[in-house]
Length: 408
Ligand SMILES: *Cc1c(COP(=O)(O)O)cnc(C)c1O
Image (cartoon, rainbow, N blue to C red; front, side):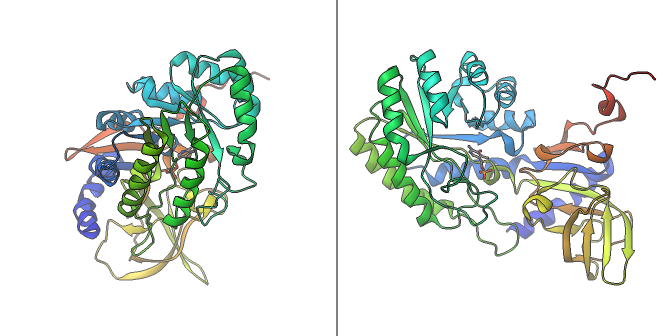
């Protein structure tokens, strides 16, 4: 089914590269809404479900508007992301602000904007409770569970900087009592890549146990970390299985708790990763003594995940889809080592061909930079069978816009 879908898209993607040039990001709105709906149906048994899309995965305003249109809320990690969400028309009540290591002043700005605050350390919780006892807040706990395989993207383990340790709940309760503040939600985010549903469910038990200490809760937020597949046959979080098991457990807990609760999630990658394609043009094919390099007009300035966390992005040659396959090392044009993939079997590449990188919807453009003084790519949203330009390619003016030149 996936293959068929890609086949269908190849000509559209090639057409987009002809009309808008390369490098360019393309997002398929249908695939985004399919994932959103899939997650909703997996938890259909839960009476009150709220999905907050994690803005940091892809913060283009049109993507935020699409999520608003679908009915999602937003998960934000900076005041700027909050502002983007409000700019996109999202009701502040549907925005949760889950920063880490930010100042009380930044939280105060978020309070003014009317969004749900989520606090992840005791120092700020105490200051906040003293100053704003009437504003209910959520607390982010650290359940000390390793849900994922990669320590660079796992944030729930013992030495993680995220969340308030579950062993410090007595201190949280003391702050709540002394300041008379209200805790309306409990949150955890064990990090990316849930490989084992049972480990995740174990972490949720810790969250349920914690929740029992708080009498005025309105929601329980289970964070995210749903794993998506990067290659054919790669493991993926079984959302349907998770939905079935957790919904039942959640509904039982609501009974036990004796008060209506909303179940919240805040996925980023799951919703947008596969909907994204990155198009880049091959500048040079270079045969060395050990490999054949295909150098594209991009680098880690546009797509850093392979170099940052060794992530795998499938690469195909759109210009010659049925050619003879050969082994290539696909690299960028940045003056650093910037290998997108080694020993990849790709249809024979000729200079000028357009390559497509898959799984390019999450943490790709949002991590892009101007390193080597290159322009950041254009972004396109494919919606109702048409390409919509949602961000122009940068220009030289953008590179110098904020610089002040002094004369010598
Ligand atoms: C990054 C992040 C998410 C989204 O994680 P994904 O792996 O993209 O689903 C959710 N919640 C918080 C607090 C985050 O920092």
